[in-house]
Amino acid sequence: MLSDVMEASEGADEAEGLHYKEMEEENDVSPTDLSELLKEGTKESHDRAENTQFVKDFLKGRIKKELFKLATVALYFTYSALEEEMDHNKDHPAFAPLYFPLELHRKKELAKDLKFFYGEDWKEKIQCSEAAKCYVDRIHQVGQNEPELLVAHAYTRYMGDLSGGQVLKKVAQRALKLPSSGKGIQFYVFENISNAQQFKQFYRARMNALDLDKKTKEKIVEEANAAFKFNMQVFDELDKIGALLTEEAQDGGLPVHDGKGDLHKCPYYATKLGKGDASCPYHIAMAMLKQPTMQFILAACIAMAAGVAAWYVM
Image 1 (cartoon, rainbow, N blue to C red):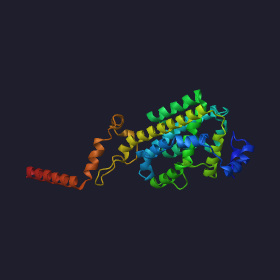
Image 2: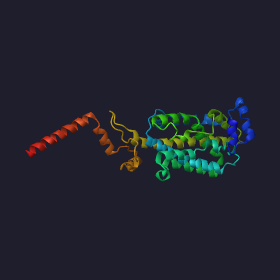
Image 3: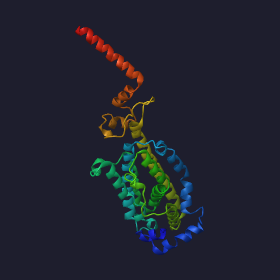
Image 4: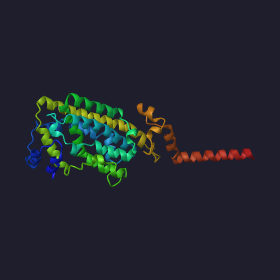
């Protein structure tokens, strides 16, 4: 029962949790409710995020393990910042009703995923990317100066994780051939939420009950659009890296990078990525050598060289 989950949450009031069914049945929302303002006010940003190349490729199962690992790293730093600020502001009146660490917090689950992908010393192998750092910095700025705007970031991330995130979980598990035990995708598993749809309705009801004036609500919607923008910047950054990982020769050549090993060992990685140039001479040469035409030319050259060498010896 969802009410049992609510009672277990630190920051959830028992009486309010028991009234959840009643709120769900009424489903009485107003256009001025925060949940409705966010839904309508972020529609365009939501559509743009869904249509980024990274998300479209992900949904089609076109994602390499190395890229998925880097996306998980970005999420780890993002949620570490978000949950740190949420913990600091758990008693703030404009956020306290939305504080559900047992149900929502993702940092521990992301740590499990990173341990699976990188090993016991995963903390020494990861670093916050430039785009993720911009996102993280904004979350800290909001948490320290305008805690009420944390609602926007919590809404954008957690509601998305409970919705489209569940689709991505299945795609990742199938495309990357991850264990059926769920290792590597714990981020998408909400063990303390038995019914995602009901929890989302409950969460929106809590949002609508916040004592906020019109101006503050408008600022929250504006911040939610900014959160979508930060997410898209992370997606774009991953796309640049993905060009190195997934680009293939047109006629069935080898991938530029097959996702195995350390991408950073490619000597062209650091400089070329910064310039937006995804070409690596070594991998391009290897891809070309897989083409039938190139193989024929190479074989002819070797045969000619062998003939010349034989004539010379004679």
